[in-house]
Length: 114
Image 1 (cartoon, rainbow, N blue to C red):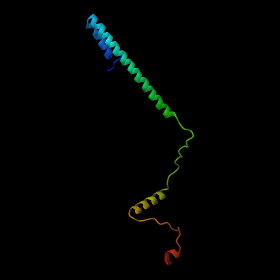
Image 2 (cartoon, rainbow, N blue to C red; image 1 turned 180 degrees about the vertical axis):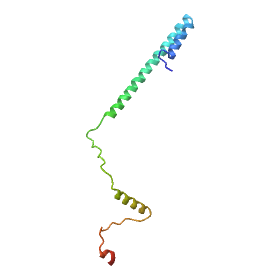
Image 3 (spheres, rainbow, N blue to C red; image 1 turned 120 degrees about the horizontal axis):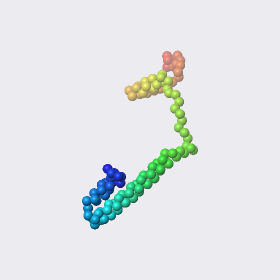
Image 4 (tube, helix red, strand yellow; image 1 turned 60 degrees about the horizontal axis):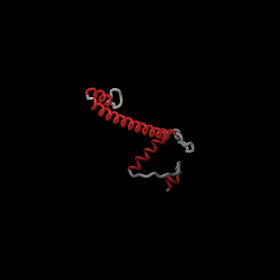
Protein backbone atom coordinates (compact mmCIF):
# COMPACT_ATOMS: atom_id res chain seq x y z
CA UNK A 1 0.00 0.00 0.00
CA UNK A 2 1.37 3.38 -0.97
CA UNK A 3 1.58 6.16 1.57
CA UNK A 4 2.00 9.25 -0.58
CA UNK A 5 0.12 8.48 -3.78
CA UNK A 6 -3.40 9.53 -4.81
CA UNK A 7 -4.85 6.35 -3.39
CA UNK A 8 -2.39 6.21 -0.50
CA UNK A 9 -2.94 6.16 3.23
CA UNK A 10 -2.59 9.92 3.68
CA UNK A 11 -5.12 10.56 0.92
CA UNK A 12 -7.61 8.28 2.69
CA UNK A 13 -7.16 10.15 5.96
CA UNK A 14 -7.58 13.51 4.26
CA UNK A 15 -10.72 12.21 2.55
CA UNK A 16 -12.08 11.05 5.90
CA UNK A 17 -11.68 14.54 7.37
CA UNK A 18 -14.98 15.58 5.75
CA UNK A 19 -16.91 13.98 8.59
CA UNK A 20 -15.05 15.93 11.30
CA UNK A 21 -15.98 19.28 12.79
CA UNK A 22 -14.17 22.51 11.92
CA UNK A 23 -11.77 22.54 14.91
CA UNK A 24 -11.11 18.82 14.69
CA UNK A 25 -10.37 19.18 10.97
CA UNK A 26 -7.75 21.87 11.63
CA UNK A 27 -5.91 19.82 14.26
CA UNK A 28 -6.21 16.58 12.27
CA UNK A 29 -5.09 18.29 9.05
CA UNK A 30 -2.01 19.75 10.75
CA UNK A 31 -1.05 16.37 12.13
CA UNK A 32 -1.61 14.57 8.83
CA UNK A 33 0.34 17.21 6.90
CA UNK A 34 3.27 17.10 9.34
CA UNK A 35 3.33 13.28 9.18
CA UNK A 36 3.16 13.43 5.38
CA UNK A 37 6.05 15.95 5.30
CA UNK A 38 8.13 13.73 7.60
CA UNK A 39 7.39 10.68 5.41
CA UNK A 40 8.32 12.59 2.24
CA UNK A 41 11.56 13.84 3.85
CA UNK A 42 12.53 10.37 5.05
CA UNK A 43 11.67 8.85 1.68
CA UNK A 44 13.83 11.45 -0.07
CA UNK A 45 16.73 10.70 2.31
CA UNK A 46 16.44 6.98 1.62
CA UNK A 47 16.26 7.55 -2.14
CA UNK A 48 19.38 9.73 -2.00
CA UNK A 49 21.27 7.16 0.08
CA UNK A 50 20.21 4.36 -2.26
CA UNK A 51 21.32 6.41 -5.29
CA UNK A 52 24.72 7.06 -3.67
CA UNK A 53 25.22 3.36 -2.91
CA UNK A 54 24.26 2.41 -6.45
CA UNK A 55 26.67 5.02 -7.81
CA UNK A 56 29.50 3.60 -5.65
CA UNK A 57 28.71 0.06 -6.81
CA UNK A 58 28.68 1.19 -10.44
CA UNK A 59 32.03 2.94 -10.01
CA UNK A 60 33.52 -0.21 -8.45
CA UNK A 61 32.20 -2.35 -11.29
CA UNK A 62 33.36 -0.03 -14.05
CA UNK A 63 36.87 0.51 -12.65
CA UNK A 64 39.47 -1.66 -14.35
CA UNK A 65 43.17 -1.62 -13.56
CA UNK A 66 44.79 -1.71 -16.98
CA UNK A 67 48.21 -2.34 -15.42
CA UNK A 68 47.14 -5.77 -14.14
CA UNK A 69 48.22 -8.71 -16.30
CA UNK A 70 45.43 -10.40 -18.18
CA UNK A 71 44.32 -13.97 -17.77
CA UNK A 72 46.20 -16.32 -20.07
CA UNK A 73 43.91 -18.09 -22.53
CA UNK A 74 43.37 -21.79 -22.08
CA UNK A 75 44.70 -23.38 -25.21
CA UNK A 76 43.97 -26.97 -26.13
CA UNK A 77 43.56 -29.98 -23.87
CA UNK A 78 45.30 -33.23 -23.02
CA UNK A 79 45.51 -35.92 -25.65
CA UNK A 80 43.16 -38.88 -24.97
CA UNK A 81 46.13 -41.25 -24.53
CA UNK A 82 47.66 -38.89 -21.96
CA UNK A 83 44.31 -38.68 -20.16
CA UNK A 84 44.08 -42.48 -20.07
CA UNK A 85 47.68 -42.77 -18.87
CA UNK A 86 47.02 -40.23 -16.08
CA UNK A 87 43.90 -42.12 -15.00
CA UNK A 88 45.76 -45.45 -14.90
CA UNK A 89 48.46 -43.85 -12.75
CA UNK A 90 45.80 -42.41 -10.44
CA UNK A 91 44.07 -45.79 -10.05
CA UNK A 92 47.27 -47.74 -9.37
CA UNK A 93 48.55 -45.04 -7.01
CA UNK A 94 45.34 -45.36 -4.98
CA UNK A 95 46.01 -49.12 -4.75
CA UNK A 96 49.47 -48.50 -3.24
CA UNK A 97 51.68 -48.75 -6.31
CA UNK A 98 54.22 -46.08 -7.19
CA UNK A 99 55.39 -44.77 -10.54
CA UNK A 100 59.00 -45.31 -11.51
CA UNK A 101 60.53 -43.58 -14.50
CA UNK A 102 63.11 -45.32 -16.63
CA UNK A 103 64.51 -45.42 -20.15
CA UNK A 104 61.91 -45.75 -22.89
CA UNK A 105 63.78 -48.55 -24.68
CA UNK A 106 65.04 -51.41 -22.55
CA UNK A 107 68.25 -53.13 -23.45
CA UNK A 108 69.23 -56.77 -23.00
CA UNK A 109 71.37 -55.68 -20.12
CA UNK A 110 68.44 -54.32 -18.15
CA UNK A 111 65.99 -57.02 -19.16
CA UNK A 112 68.04 -60.18 -18.82
CA UNK A 113 71.44 -59.64 -17.27
CA UNK A 114 70.47 -57.67 -14.19
